[in-house]
Structure formats: C-alpha cells, structure tokens
Amino acid sequence: MEGVRKVFLVAVVLLTLAGAVGCYPVLKKEAQRPEEALRQVRFLSHPFRDDLDSESLTLAVRRNLEYLDRLNPETVFHYGPHDFTIQQVRESQEVFLDLLSKGLDAGQLSREIRKKFRVYRATGRAGDTRVLFTGYYEPMYEGSLAPDETFRYPLYRPPDDLMRIDLSLFSEKFKGENIVARIEGKKILPYYSRYQIEAERVLEGKDLEIAWLKDPLDVAFLHIQGSGKLRLPGGRDLLVHYQASNGRPYRSIGRYMIEKGFLAREEMSMQAIRKYLTENPEVLDEVLNYNPSYVFFRQVENGPLGSLGVLLTPGRSVALDSKIFPKGALGFISCQKPLVNDQGDIIGWTKFSRFVLNQDSGGAIKGAGRADIFWGSGPYAELAAGHLQHEGDLYILIKKP
Image 1 (cartoon, rainbow, N blue to C red):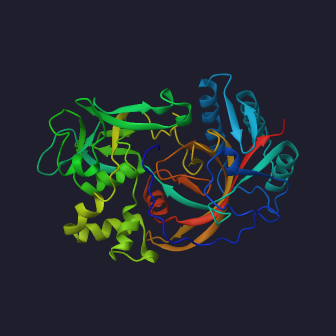
Image 2 (cartoon, rainbow, N blue to C red):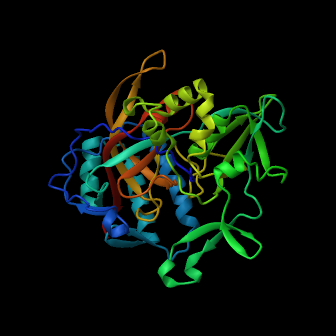
Image 3 (spheres, helix red, strand yellow):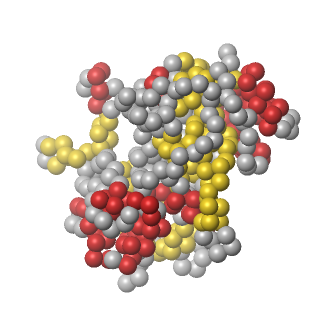
C-alpha cells in the first residue's frame, strides 16, 4: 500500500539459503538507476520452489495483467540494463500462467523457467549483496463516523490546499522529481508536518475527517500500513486507503526509540513499539511526532489496493522501489517466515521461497536492497508484518526475447 511503509527494521538475521552461483559485486553506494538495481544471472543453484498454493499465484498474475492492460501500449519497462515493451512483459506473464496450468513440480518448473526466462538478481544494499525484507498487512481497528469521548483521533482526507508540483516543468535536470507544498500568500511552503497537524490541529474544522479512532497509535500504524478496515458501531466495515502524503521525509520511530534507549535493538517490532508507548504515554507524542510524514486517506469499496491500483494478494504482492524496479514485474524471493504456536507466539523462523509480483511501493522502501511483503490480514499477518526484519534474495523474471 503506497505511502509510508514501516522502517522499524534495525536488527537483521542472515539467511543461508543458496543464491545464484558466483560472486556478486558489492555496491559502493545505493542504486540510483534501474541498470544498477538488477544484474542478470546465468544459473541458480536452487530450484524455484514455492511454499504457497498455485491458485493465489494465478490470481496475483491475472490481477497484474489487468494493470498492464490499462497502460499505454508504448510503455517501456527497465529490467536492469535491458528494456522490454509492455507487449513483452504481458507475453512473459501469460507464458508463466501457461506453465502454472500444467501442474509441474518444482524441478520441472525450474527447468522450464531456465529455458524460457531471463533471471535478474537484485543487487542489494550498499556494502551488502542481499535484500532486507520487512512486511506489512491490512489492520482492522474500531472506528466511528462521528467523534465522541471514545473516538477522538481523526483520519483525514487530502486537504484542498495540498498540491504536488512537478519540478521537471521548470528544468530537465529535475525529471521525475516532485515536491508537495502549500501556498501561503505569495510563498510556496512545505506542507504541514505531523506535529502541526496533530499537536497544533491546523486542519481542524475543515471538514476533512473520514472517521475517528480510539487510539492515536491506531492512527499512526494505519499511516504506516497504508490501508485498513475500520469496524464501525453496528458491525459495518469501512475500508480506507492511502491517497496522499504531506511530502515530508519518513523518519523511523523504531530507530528513534532505540537511540533514546526506550527499546533494545533485539526486541524491536511493531508489537514492542505499541506495548512500550501504551505503557509510557508520557513519551507518546514525542515519539510519534519525531516522524514528520503524514498520510491522508480515501474511502474505497474494495481493498487493499497497491500503488498499481490492483487488489493485493496476501503473500504474493510485494512493495519495491518503483524508481529502479519495473512495476508489475514477476519476481521470486527467498527469506524467512515466523513459526507460531497455538498461543500465537513466535517460536522460531523457517526458510521459504515463492513467486511474487511487484504491485506496490512505499515511502520507506527505497533502493535495491529493500522489499516489503504483504501478508494479508489477521493475527498471523500482523505478527509476520510486525517482526519480519530478515535478509534474503530477490529475483526478477521475464521471458527471453
């Protein structure tokens, strides 16, 4: 879900799952261009083994084809150093769907992919050839369409004075660059920060409220996740989705809490943040307002939606940096997922691998070494999203020309 994606990550666990054969050059600086984000690989030492059902993968690919059908036929996608037309991308995913329909086992599917597809590996973070995976999910919180003593914390729709300015209109050197601003008299100013909106209440009385929540932490985590469900009095659900942000840079409240000594690195998770701030309300505003970014929502009929405008598929949709990775690309990941007991506690982590689709983006998901997995909704999704901070491998696939 586009918008501010969480960066609670601080500690990482190294995986031992084999990647592509050979040595991978370490990036000296963060990838800035598509050709720096992906490198073609010739051979993988492990099969394309998928831990999920083929029905969810088929659904995710079909939703992806709907996105491709909406694009200009002249659209070109950058897969590392190589360019592919939208027709090539579409044909590639149709061929992949055909392979899925044959009911091949992992070995057979791997052989077919190696024959028919190019495989690219994400170059990772600067100084590290691997990708740091985090997760997100669709939360559900209690909400109300009218404020009262219980429901006091609003979700806002985008204000009328919020504007996005395309800087490329002023100079070619700013191609692809935008700023979010407001006009005050004859001045163009940055849009209001979270502190100004929450503490100084600069948007109050402008009739921008979509709904009200019980807890300011619910609001903050909904901003981080980008969309969710609100359970209204009477049992009806209201779906809300990211619409815009104030353009301020995202600053990790998790990292801030570690620096201040509120939490230790090894215990960091979304759940740990909520627990600490609930038990220590005197630092709540300080921590939340450390992050100046603020998200505005819209009501939707179906969700959750990714930045491509398609419904996200649990476990199959991922968020990547849209500036350097091709939107709607078919991918393959290897990482770890939590093992949970009957009491809902994590008792360990296990390796997994699966095919995914690049169907989302996020303000904190930047560079060739970051990926965010959409886990869906429910207790396991919340647990996985809140605790996943593991390194793994990301591959992007497209049919050979």
